[in-house]
Image (cartoon, rainbow, N blue to C red):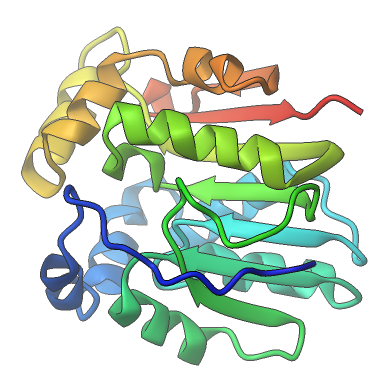
Length: 223
């Protein structure tokens, strides 16, 4: 899995200082937020299980944050490798303490310019990351997912979704408006699955668990 060493340029939309502050609180806030839904770890584990990861696979966890999803992937690939990438040095510092194994690595990177060669990974995973990215940059990021996936490789993403009906629609809408930003709300009102397909990935399935407040999209790359 070849990596490039180009310097990482922080995009205009991204605030390093915001994520420096948030890195101290992120895990606690997410843990509390998911208590009504059976717990964060259980929800992430069910999500990762959908990927069908094999022990020898190479997996890329984009927008990995503090490494909560990376930590669940890691035991599944003890004969392979999992790489987590994020734009926040402070979130990555938490991740490196959380997930320690010889087959796990973390790297500072922007998802619209991934520092990896073509056809490098069996899986690309993203949990709660795409809503942080403006639509035009998100389109470039999804093109990068396609590029770094091996032929037949799989993409799996978990993010917010706007349900059709009360009270789930009001609940998740209020949560995103309080804890997130306008970029996230716009993505939630749009059609993320169509964006995935527009990048050239083959859309396989879209699920909307917990009353439609979240969406899980799976896709793959042509063999």
